[in-house]
Amino acid sequence: MNRFALVFVLLLAVPAGLGAQGPNWGLFNSPKGFGVSAESPVKGGTFNSFDLYADIYGLPNGRASSYPGVRIQALHNMVLRSYDKPGRSSFVYAGFGAAAGYVRDFESFSWWNSGPAYLIMNMGGIVCISGAFGVRCDFADVTLDLGLQADAGFYIRRHESHGNLMFELYRNGLYNSLYPQLRILWNMSGGGSSGGHRGQVSPFDFGVEWGSNVMFYSVINRNYVGRYGERVDDSSRGFAFYANGAVRLYAGVYAGEKLRFDLGAGYAGIADSRRVVPVTARMNFLPRGRFRDGAVVFVDAGASLSTVDRWQAGLLASAGAGYRKCLSSGAGLSLLANLRYAQDRPGIFSPDLGTYVPAGDIRNNAAGYLSAGITLSVDIIR
Image (cartoon, rainbow, N blue to C red; front, side, top):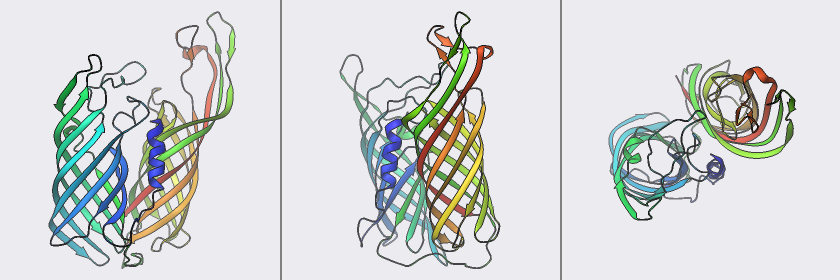
């Protein structure tokens, strides 16, 4: 998951609008990958969408090497039913199109003691026909498009041992069809702010946050009994860089218009091969209120449950700030930067023993990681 997360950080930094007229431009976000998107305005009940993104199959769980594949796709979409309300226009759509790329394909999931087996097939090219179904919401100057897409096509690669050309069905095109795709797009031709209070609004909301963190400093203290009964001290500290992704689901409540408290959980990487389930409480301060565009500041803390070491708990805390765009009736879209501290107790591998040190022989085992990152967050009213 190393270079993919760095690529994702760079994609977040791409200017959302690349032109003053024509299509809406923005970001493509999915468990399939991350990239850039464009969608044309709706005319005659149809619109077109285009995506270029990094395909991350095998990277989040450590099965693949440290670089992603790449995909490009184009769809022609037809509006099935519209739902218009003050401040936004929403509709359900279905579409068809084509996709191509250079990616990895599905391999059966088998486990070692320490984690899933690595992918062994070479990357290859794909040529597919695609079908999509989704919901698109157009606000004054922001569009949210949430949908599903299935691909049927061929996967072309060279055999790992013999070097001959292999033609196969592209299995991930169907296996990953239930992974959601979220496009966040900006209309740079104008339209004004979509913020503002529009009637009675619930104080409760929920949302999702996703992004990348780069670990840049680690402190590790280990003390254990060695193979011959000697005391081994293996401590280190210093700068070490490793990038990871993270996703967090949360539910919250507003205490007034400027303060929101939420509780969330998700999945995150904190260091090389260290992945956890974070369970955290967060306080968000919005100086201009939930119904206006402006800054947001937050602090959070909680537990991180290791997915590797039998759900062993550690400490996780972060603080950050960013900018929040009010979409409609108090819902919002936020771009956030953060500084995070994670405490961990990873297993100790002994070269002398050729295995991990038994828990009874460990006298001290603590690791702390500092990281900085950037995330996107969408909060929706109940």
